[in-house]
Length: 364
Image (cartoon, rainbow, N blue to C red):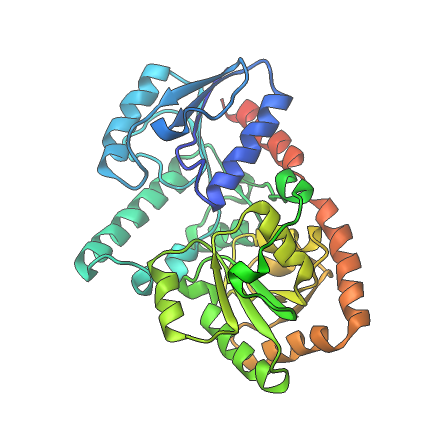
């Protein structure tokens, strides 16, 4: 069987992590089928085993080139099946494919507050995204989702047959679990105690709500800090300018070793989102022995189970109360840490890869 996988997003944060782990596990599981891995030129050094062949594709995602050139490249490969790890499937591609839909957040939380595009261009791209998304959902042989929450959204909002959707939960990177913790606290001006967040600052993440809660918490404990990690870009800079406070630490990008240390030394990790398709940082916190306080929205209850303390993300007072419980109750902290360490064992990239391979075999 000839299987093509569009891996152009392999070095991006969210979908890239999914792709890297999927490919790593598939190479261990399957030495029989022939794989064609589509990569940008800068990613061609990515190591693959003998039955995995690299195919250079020199254009990015969400472009007209993707829509018009990618079908021709795939036609030359002549695969039995293509796996698109995101909804950006070329409308004119007529071959068999499966698609991974990670979330529907772009439809529920328009990104007009989180874009540098002018309003007209943004509106046109939004229309294009909806058309491309619809094409992917309707024409795919099978849809993979990271959670039952996203599966149910597709059933209810897009009228997809539930038999067409397979839930393949994600997991924590082995690299993170085995990373040696290290952090230059002076570089970041971090002085425990602190509460920790990692992610982006798009509207659905509710980071400004978290900051407002922190400012109230600090009135009771002036030594408390808030550490926010994520890729430095335009939107982080806007947040920095709005909240110029020495106890709100913006670290920018952090290495695996730094990330593990930030989790391990935090009083707690906070996930304040209005919606998530999965919520991998929850599992990262569990794996790092960090108690987690999380929104009860989206997939987060499904992922966290009984291992986190939950709040309504629209209720900032409740968020503050739950954080205070963890800050003030060491027995609760230890109980959450213990439950988290057990919960993270329920998730495995190997299991995801096995489920995905079964889908390939069924759909090709």
